[in-house]
Image (cartoon, rainbow, N blue to C red; front, side, top):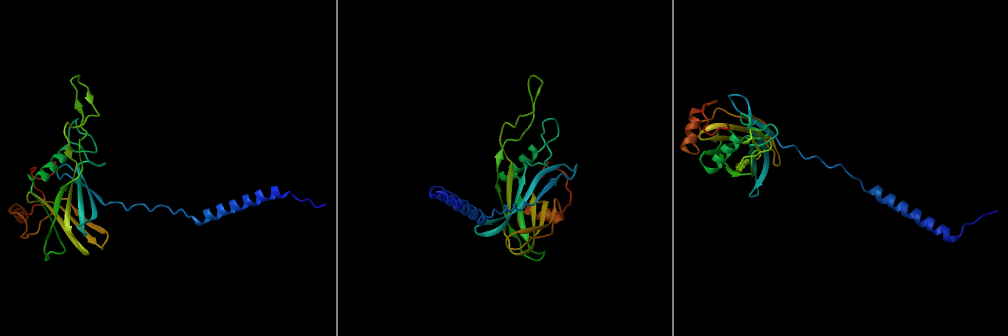
Length: 237
């Protein structure tokens, strides 16, 4: 005996089957590709040449300035590896002395010279400096009760970052030098391929070549060309 189902029962089943297949087809055409992880920004630690403490966090990024590529050197007084000032006040991850030096650089009390060249015989391109983030520095405070406030911060804000730019860069291998008050402080060697820069060398202090460029103080520093200099002029303490 052939049994037949009522039409009223068959139609909803067919419709449900079509809807399920349609949803399955839709799902089959949508492929969720895993998001590509961003490229890590090259970062370096700037160390004190006397005791080896890490005084600043340095990050390097290619930026477009007036539609021309430039290498941005971000110097930060805060960062996961930055060592604090000596004593109980200092908190790991920030250095108030470095922030004070950044403020002097921005105010013009330190002469900052940023130059980039493609070879020892090529001309120099001069870069610039601008302020980055500002904020308070974590710093423990001794209360009148004799207890220590471990969550305290500095009463005033400091520049936490400065941005040094190389000026326009072109394809090929080149070097950027940073002099502060005529004293060589940083040299970065890199190869620029048109979109990204591959960092091939990072020196915290270096022998400066004798180039006729910049202020008299900078030229004097280049002639002297010390690798290690005593004193605190233009240095991250």
